[in-house]
Image 1 (tube, rainbow over the protein chains, first blue to last red):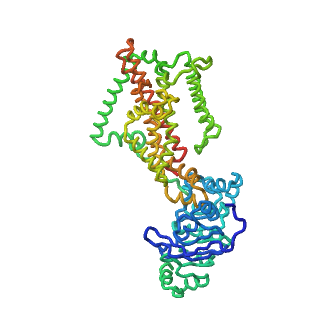
Image 2 (image 1 turned 90 degrees about the vertical axis):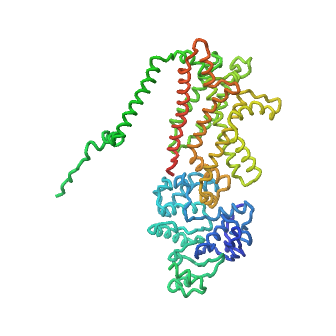
Image 3 (image 1 turned 180 degrees about the vertical axis):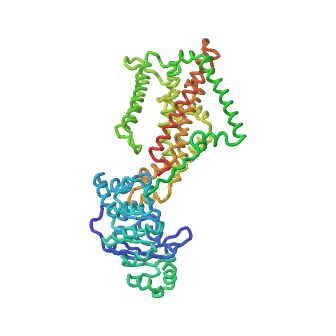
Length: 256
Length: 352
């Protein structure tokens, strides 16, 4: 499958997506269309399916019914489609998942060298630029174990960006961080959002949502319960009762 | 005006050598007793051993038979070939040590050098046909002594390691046929002693091969040892693979690597690093298990030792001969063990 040069406008389309873990119906017919450049924040209670939802988009989980179309490529069991989609999506995990046996710089250059077949020099140059963009160029020669949590997560963001993805997925990126490190990671994500990257972020950080989100999904019991625009979110933050659905009000009043 | 605070030193009998002695050897009355008994015991044993080694032992049995210990029945006229082979290995080892990189990854030409040395040394030691003037045939069935032990151990180790890794990956495969085959192989081999594997390879291997291929005793023993060790290595590697968190696979897939690259760049390197102690332990076992080939009529270092003691000039000198063999085994095994420790340090095992 050749790399697509232009990007379609509706970059992620999910139609009636269902998924079961055994008998547990974790995704119950999700329908959503995300446009290029959008910053979508997904929030909701634990077990509601929000992590599972974004993980089905890059095939870390397999959906059992429905269609998912990413950048015009349909996500089926065809390995070529799966690999093509995974190359276009970058993901940042709650537990960072950096490769501990490689230095920071090698973590970032690994995929461009082996998947995009860049030369070592080009990969390292890009990697250093990205490390500067996330604010930690001086850590390039260290091993992940020698870095703090906030630094590791920023390396993870740089590693995902090194593949020049069209979409970035974030699965609770700051949930495992100490409070003083959350800001440094959120600042990087805000800069990324302002630069026009299409992002889907599962998070409880409403401050981040208020700053850069274009849409906010409240996800519970396997589907999107309510969708809020930025203004509606700002209003709901002031007064959770401004949300339309009861479950949304309950959740917001718990986390705010 | 800042005054230098008075530095109070700790009491002299509590720190340093005196402190250590006091704390560990003389702290209570029963510790004092134990210390004296231990010192007495060590003294008695050491005195007996050193007296024997220096005064009573007849080391001429070792000195006179040194060549036999080293290369066994290898023809003396061709012994230079063994020395040259040894020289190649020593040279490569020195080059590896000099040009080692801090991360533990050797340079490419060194790896090529080591890979080429295997067939080169095989040809050098074995030679061509009986009539050829340059390197006449010295069939491997004639090799004995330490030469045979090293050949069996090195080839066994080098061959069983990749086979073991493949078996471990096969056992974890999602394809049922491969998984069942690998599991049956591993569990069968692990269920029988090495001696029976050696017997089976002596007797049954010719049945599986076409009649044109006739393997000598050494080749059959080598096959048996390799197949045996591979099963144990496979389980060690499988343990390492199981210890890799799922997040590593997910991150590797998320960044675009395909299944082969995920395994080869991310999972296997971490898994193998984690089980280096277990794998090298298996290699050391293999080295010592080569002594079992006496069962199938081959004379390794211990077999030769027994033959040396059997000569009429040297009857009764078991202690000297077996002590010498024990020292050789210890040197080899300890070398492997300390190389393993250095490798672990270079790769940061347990740190990252």
